[in-house]
Amino acid sequence: MPSKPKATPKKAARPRPAKLLSGGNPQVAKADGHAPVQAYIAAVPGWKKEVCRKLDALIVRKVPGVQKAVKWNSPFYGVPGQGWFASFHVFTNYVKLTFFKGTSLDPVPSGGASREGRWINIGEQGFDQEQFTRWIKQAAKIPGWMA
Image (cartoon, rainbow, N blue to C red; front, side):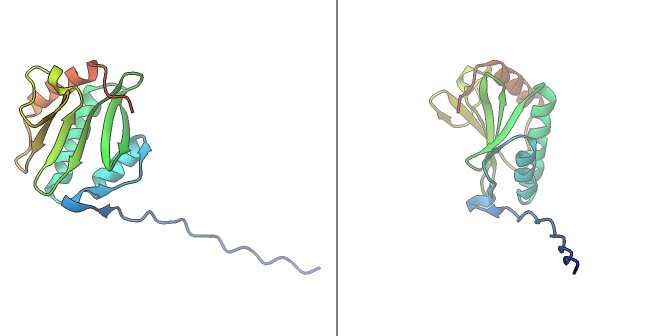
C-alpha cells in the first residue's frame, strides 16, 4: 500500500502593513480590543506615533479596565457598560483627540466643538500630560457615546 504524501506545512500569513490614508491616518480593520489599537499605533508615521503611544499609555494607566477598539480608522476608548469617552485620529500636521462629552469637562477643552464633543489638536510639540490626565479621568466618569 503506497504511503500518502506528507502535506507541506503552510507558512503563517504575514499581516499586511496598514494602508495610510490621507494625512497619514492608518487604515486598520474595525475590531475590538488592545491588539487592533496597537496595530493602528504601530502604523502611524513619524512623530505622531509617539503622541499616539503616549495618549494610549496615559489612558490605560488612568482608566482601570478601559475598553479599546478601532472604529472608522480611529482608536476608541470606553468604560464597559458606560460607552466611549474618547478617540483619536491622525492628520497631516496633528493628532486630533476627541472627548465625546467634552463640554462636560472642567475646563472645557479649547479645541473645536460639535454638539457635546470637544477636541484638541496635538502638534509635534506634544501635550500637557497633567491637563490631559485630568480630562481623561473626568471623561471616563461621564456616561459616553454608545455605538
